[in-house]
Length: 57
Image (tube, rainbow, N blue to C red; front, side, top):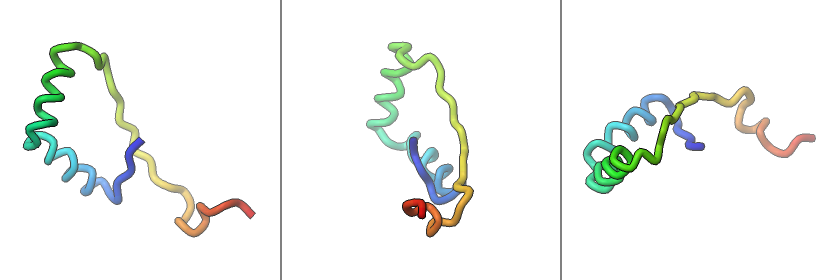
């Protein structure tokens, strides 16, 4: 699971992948090997403010 500050931050992260030579090589290996059949993205957001995510009282 990955976490990003915002959808915009996630989109910047994804945009950089196409320019990174190591990612391009790894993506080619994934395509050629067929090791990934499918993947899903689920976008979630916290329901509580950060202060309320501490240990329950």
